[in-house]
Image (cartoon, rainbow over the protein chains, first blue to last red):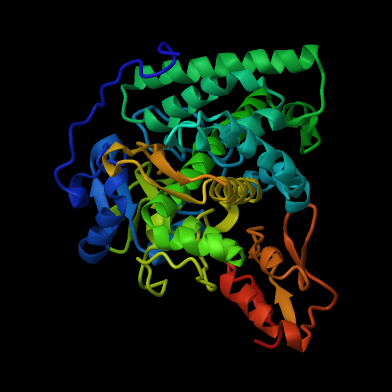
Length: 410
Length: 65
């Protein structure tokens, strides 16, 4: 794996000194301290700017994040990962439709993929997801300390999406490598990123060829055989949508599972309450999704315009930190508290507007079943050592190493 | 009480269907529908209000709002 990961480990940028004027979402200090950084910015500089990545804006209030998410005229989705790489794919299709697409094309590309991810298609996966979660716990050695990210959370979404796409389950490490390259390696030299995308492309070519040679019923075959405007999808569209389905659900869901377990490991009162009153699970899961929403999306400015006094220029990046919007006290009562019985919770963990996370029904199912099963099997656990928790780098926020000490097994 | 859904606003977050399956259904695309004509029996009014208050897109309203 080492040749797949971390080729060129050096960031193009140095450490951040001032989050209001020089922020960097890929600085290793950003995700571990994100809640404090967003709170400071909300009070002092609600739309921060940085010259990094060619110019990036960071709005942190719910009102601004929501306004940008709904404004597809001034903000394009043609690239949604703020990185050093040149933007090659053009609007309105973009490199990974429909997440990278703008209206009016977006509507058609998205409509193709909505049915396979609608609730009634996703709900039947619950049994398999639960069996997988139990199997992962069964496979853990009977040690005091287990890693809830490395041994548990990271395996769940990878396994499910590989099965949906009809890709080999044994390639799971490879998929996590691609996710790391594409979403965590955003600050590497452009050539390093291009090489990573070429590896991903070559892998997808092999999988598509395998589907031609061995036809079978799965999402890959569906994309290869479906039509848009009465024509087959272009090969670029097929590959781009597979990239989206393969990568977008992996570290996002793994992060939400990990953050929820991190919260329970750090908050024994909530863990005990859920053990005593399982009826709290639905509100608890929505609250974990609000507070620990893993996904910050991005847009590119489509037209020069003034945004709340900020001179936004064409092709500037704009980060859309939905988790920061979810923590805005102007929108949520007791926003900075985790209330597992919060009944009114209009959070935007899965985005707002036309780009609502396509896989949200699957993600929510995986998070709910994974966290419930972990607690069912390990009714009491705590952080083994808060200093050993390692958080992700980049727009997807969650623990990548999460050693917890199991205090009681069911 | 009667509920309506603005289908232009609904993006398929599925919160209403999860909270009150007695009142909401979803179509093959994951978009929400009210069951029947959206009339809420008195014993489900609290659930209906919860669904309205949790819709991220403000797509659910009480008819006559």
